[in-house]
Amino acid sequence: MNLLSLLLAMMSLVYVNHDIQIATFRIYKESTDLLLDINMDSEDLSLELDIASSELSRERVEEYINTQTAFIFDGQRSLLKVHSLSFTGDHISVQSSFDVSITSFETIEIHNTCLLTLEDQSNVIAIRLNDAERDFLMNSRRTMIQVTL
Image (cartoon, rainbow, N blue to C red; front, top):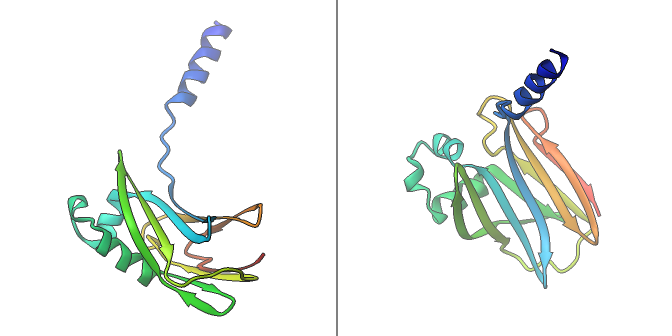
């Protein structure tokens, strides 16, 4: 009987519903380019933009990201240029780069309100620069961070 209880308890862990609202923003360098990859729920983005998922285009996503975020490198703001979108299941991946050539910098100030109108939404900022990995959680109570590299 104890073995059956243990098996049932273990099986219930497999079927836990993961409805955590998280988007990830990964900043990294490739060659000399400073890039940003974003992953989020496509349905949430569609709701935020008030359009159907099939209408999510590179231009619409770029406009939304640039109005909901600010990336400031040593006091200089850089806008994002979205290069491509890819859809996997319920998620959208956005591949983008910053519009100014940034060769070196000491600080990044990030403002991020993407999808924060949704209940319990959080955004994870993953910075992969200078052979270091740093992650930051942003939400409706924390929409700005400043990072010294």
